[in-house]
Image (tube, rainbow, N blue to C red; front, side, top):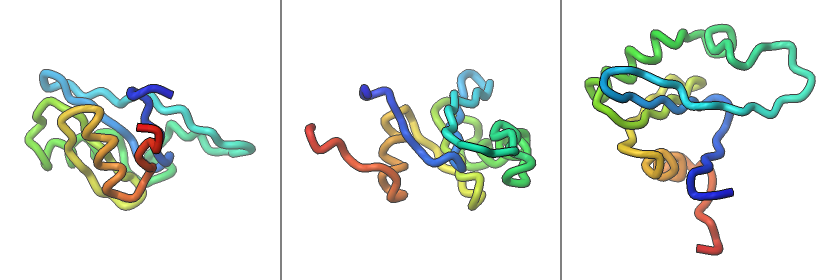
Length: 101
């Protein structure tokens, strides 16, 4: 894995805002024998992408950068860049610092 790889639980989503446009970053979910479509967050977490974007906009006025959404607990975070996302996840107790570095 390289420095651009971010591994996080499936109940988190990473969004990027550029020039007032919102993009959800790619997600690869590893789930075996599930009948739920894991891309349908409204069914799983009871919140739509539009509701998430509204909450993300509220925390920082839609400033360009990365946003981290904890869909399970309905908590949202602003991060300036991808490294900020990694740092925020570490602060939340998710992941660990590479021991080789």
